Length: 177
View 1 (tube, helix red, strand yellow):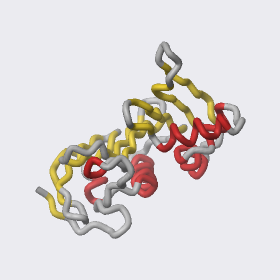
View 2: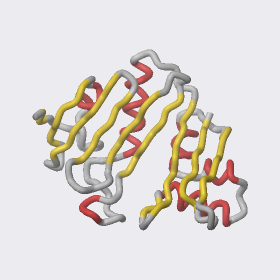
View 3: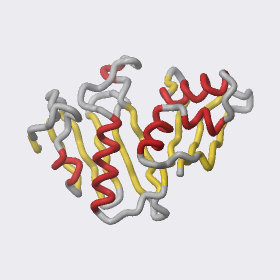
């Protein structure tokens, strides 16, 4: 098990994010975690029953795919994990991919709505649409959309909603370029 001195912001040391392979480590808050990293993926998982995780992959077309679940800590859907700071993770992971020679063309993200879990992006997207925004504008005005814009990806080229047969939204797939 790796024990690291993590910076105060992310709670996970840069050396963990840059390491290829997989291993357990102790985060700044004392949580046992696991990193699973390859040339095109950087993922951090918790060992408890949380749904919290940080994961980013880059595909062969240069699109970033990210799964970021910072809430759900200790079973509380509103409690954020003390070591997971999604924006900082994304910034560091993208810098690592660029250092590895990847040309990033955009972001692809899936926002979920199932059971008693609705992602913050889904909530913002639906609220934006209810306020009268078209789907692309509603997507740009979510956390993911604002993050994409901060990296220069200011155009939504795909918004695809998946719903149940009764019309209940299950997920939203979005591409930012």
